[in-house]
Length: 359
Figure 1 (tube, rainbow, N blue to C red):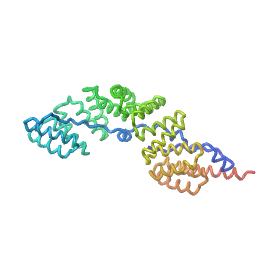
Figure 2 (figure 1 turned 90 degrees about the vertical axis):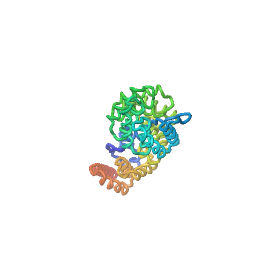
Figure 3 (figure 1 turned 90 degrees about the horizontal axis):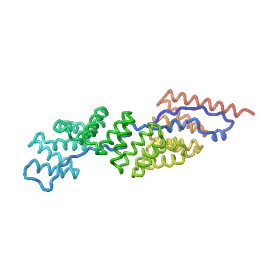
Figure 4 (figure 1 turned 180 degrees about the vertical axis):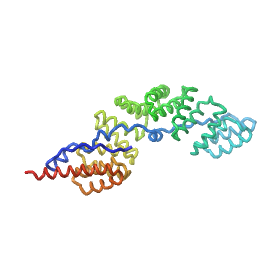
């Protein structure tokens, strides 16, 4: 998610002490602490899209063999013994080729086992038999979403919601897909409908907050991120996004607290590491900032924003050799950015040297 940090000119100072007391303009913190929009990958990692299983259930197995097999298979599904369940559903289909429940649950089994291609084959086969099943439309939509086919996903999510508008899961999935494709207004209205039907799930207010973040309605975004936290979410993205919002609202202490919480949940999450480091740098806490920047670069050596932050911080603290080393590496990743960065530091060094020579 990191991008190139726009560079701003640094005031010419007469000595190193005053140079360190200067505001950390060079990193352009407001640019780097931008709202990171919830793109496809983030959404899919933040929320587990649920495949609804249609498990056959009877108090006692009936006497006919198909129904008896369905009961046994349903029990195996409940126990998450998918291989055993699959064998039983295969037997059902040997006896009844078009058995809707067996076909649908075969799709659910393959999905649970990670074979989404085969899962989609069974779900689409079941859909031809019973297109009025809302959960089935949802399942087809989920797989299309996972495979990056958002247009198809939206078509089936909308069909699912049309068939059953009372299930918050269906509304949530549709709202998230709208959000992924930039239809923020549609996403917000759909997620609000889901919120009316589910007052427990933390995912819904999280994504409502994402909508407001995109709209730059930061007060509303902050409110809904906090609502998600109040529902027990420990998602590191939630803490990070909330920290960004609070930074934009002029609440640096709260922002730092949430960046630290995000890092505590995921120590390898580079964005809050970088954001916290920049916050420290703005306060001239370079000794605290440098280890964070070093960790960012170690975790992602090609993240230019981390490299720039570390290279400039080294330069600001007089560690020129280390700064040169970082910037040389930056040249290999992004030669244009590296050249610009090197030139900027050279200019600043020259100005400082000339200033120091003056009586």
